[in-house]
Image (tube, rainbow, N blue to C red; front, side, top):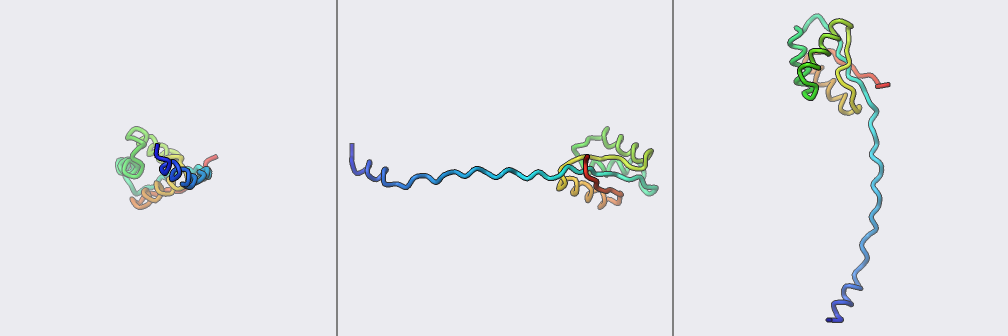
Length: 104
């Protein structure tokens, strides 16, 4: 065995100590509310919901639209604040009235 190699390996600095990752901050859960209006046709609202929050699926979008129509407002989705804010903004850009409220 070559002693010079053993000496070189032992002279290498130790690997740095791995620091634990800080806990990921959790964003507060937030509801996106859709408010009824007399401007948009029902099928438009369903289409806009599908475009803004595609993971909901058509049946859920129809249910949200009907609830908003009947009750004046409906919960579209509950998500971390950052996501909810984005969904509400997408709905607003399509002319719908969407607001945010803290989830309880």
